Length: 167
Length: 143
Image (cartoon, rainbow over all chains, first blue to last red; front, top):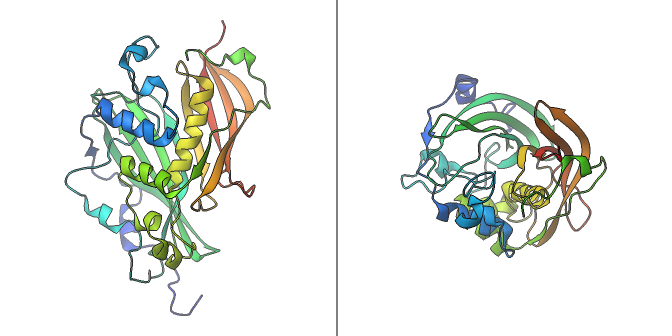
């Protein structure tokens, strides 16, 4: 660690937003094609389970139709790119400053009602808390973010606690 | 694939069949394509190196997907994954062979639900356990 390194990676924005729910984000309606492509990608090269793509088969199950894999992300590919997406980590040709490197530290998801074709998912999230400590990459901050997803009927789909790492 | 696993047939210590994949660059790219995850750290070796990780590295959420796949393959379509928790402690390097590990830790009944708790991890080809955690699935009972 050099003397030029900061003593904390906590930002004023973090302090101001701690515990405060951010604005809701609404997904586009989920399509069968979105679910099918997701399942193909994560099971490749194996044929994914029919529950994710075969409507006739899915009708015979307790779900009564196609459902999405638990990890399906209905918020991928918004046509208007949120500003936050432009800052997903370091970029080529520029040495990242202390605190600009990011890692996914992990998450805990609790799954409730499955997502289905036609669903519109609403998400909200908030910064819960953080921990700072010295790690193998020097000073490192672990920020815990809490989010909730609901479907268009107001049913809880998923609750997530994710750990964002910066160093 | 209807009901694969009945509560009564599961024993503490049982191991869930593994889901294994070699994570080459195409494999990462397929996931990036569906998850809209075009992040330089996952795409550009120079950026991964500048970040102190040696090279571009894989998405934690792809390991997450592999564990969910293992659980889904095991429990079948008439059951639910209720919870999954993992910490991504080691980097997924290009061409790693990742193997899911899931072991039954506990069985319990809450109300009408029959729950199985599992210890989870993802092992790489060097035996490094990269992503410890736990999961809970809800399965049918023979009743």
